[in-house]
Amino acid sequence: MNAFKDAGHIFRLVAVFVVGTLVFFGMRAFLVPKSFGQYGHYRGDALAEVAGRPVNFAGHQACEDCHSDVLEKKKSGRHAHVNCEACHGALAKHADDPGSVQPAKLDTAVLCVRCHEANIAKPKGFPQVVSADHSSGMPCDTCHQPHSPSIETAETAKAATKATTGGTK
Amino acid sequence: MSVTRRHLLLLLPAAAIAWKHVLAGTPEVSPNYKLSEHWWSMLIDLPKCIGCGNCVRACQTENDVPDGYFRTWVERYHVTDYDIENPHVDSPDGAKEGFPPSKEQGGKNFFVPKLCNHCADSPCTQVCPVGATFISPDGVVLIDKKYCLGCRYCVQACPYGCRFINPKTETAEKCTLCYHRITKGLTTACCEACPTGARQLTDLKNPSDPIHEFLKTHSVQVLKPYMATHAKVFYNGLDGSVR
Image (cartoon, rainbow over all chains, first blue to last red; front, side):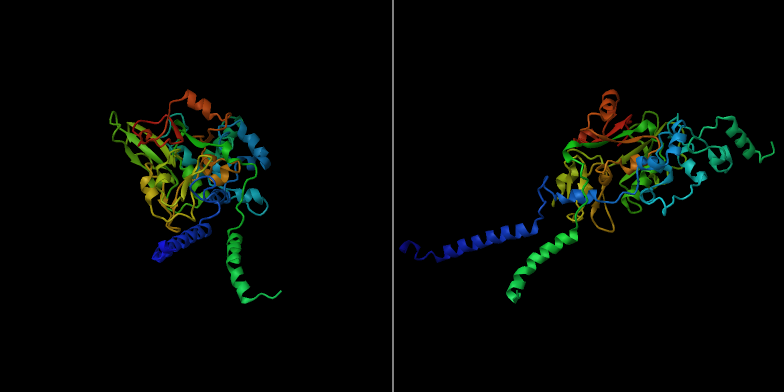
C-alpha cells in the first residue's frame, strides 16, 4: 500500500481522463447524426434530402402520355426533338392536376426569336432570321405552326400569303 | 402510473430526440433507385448550342436559384484569327435572356454552356472542413445545406467558378445535376429544356447509354484537364480558347 501512499494526485488525474473520455464519447453519440459516415465523411441522410425536392419540369414523357396528338404532329417536323417544356415552360403542376392548372398561351413573337434570331455565334446550319426583316413584327404563328414549322403544303402557303398581303389575293 | 418529477426529467431528453426525428420528417426515397448502379455525367455537344439560354432559365425555375446567381450559364466566345489565348468572352446575365447580336464581326464565334463538372476528384469537397459537401456514391457533387457553415472555402477551391453563396441561406450552392429528378428517372431541367440536344445527361455505368459510343467516336474534352479534377462534363468540339 505504501507504493500508493502519495499517489492520490495520479488517481485524480486518471479519473479526470476517464470522465473526459466518457464525456467525449457521450457528446459524440449525441451530437453526430446517425447517418454520418453511412457512405463517407458526410451525412447520408443529406442524399435523400437533396433528392426530396419537388419537381417543376414534368418531363416530356408525362406530356406525351396525354398529348399524343401533338406528338404525332411534331414527329414529322423540324421540332420533333424539341421537348414540350422547352417552349411551354415548367408544367409539372399541370401534369399533376390538368384540370385546374392550365398552361399560359405563348406569344410566338417573343418565343421563337429566342432560338431563331440571327447571331454570328450560332451554328451555321441552324435556321436563323433577322426577325425585323423577316416578319416585320408579325407573330411567327401567322405563317409557321410551331409544332411543325416548315411551310410546305399548298394550304399553309396560301394561308401565309393571305396573311402577309392582308387577304387581298 | 404516476410520473414523478424524477421520471419526467429522465424522459425529457428522450422525448427531445424523438421530436427532432418527427420534425425532420421521412425523406422521400425513390424505391427503385440504386446508388451503386449509376455514375452520372453530362455531355455538351458544342456545335449544337445556339445560346438561347433555355437551360439557364430552366435551371432557375427548377431550383429556385436567386436572381444574379447561376448554377449553369452560357458564355459567348469571340476569337480573332490566331489569338486563341485572348478570347473575348461575354455572358450577359448568364445568358438568362439569350444573347444580343454580336458587336464583333468575323473571327470565330461560338457558345459554351457551363455548369458544375461533377469532378470525380473534386477540389471543393476536399477543402470542406465539416463534411458538408461530398461526392455521392452515384457520382454527383452535392451540398448538405444543414451542415454547411458558409465558410466559402469551396467557392474559392472550385477551378470552374461553379459555386456561390446563396444570399438567403448563407450556405454554399451549386448544380446538383437535378439530383431530385435523376433519382426519379427524369433528366435534368436544363437537358429537358434544351431545344437542340446540346446537353445530354449521361450515365457512365449504364452500358446501353449512347455516351460510350459517342466518347469512342468523337474528339471530346473536359475543361482544365491539367487540374486533374477528373471532370465528368464532357465537351464535344471544345475550342482551345475556352478556359
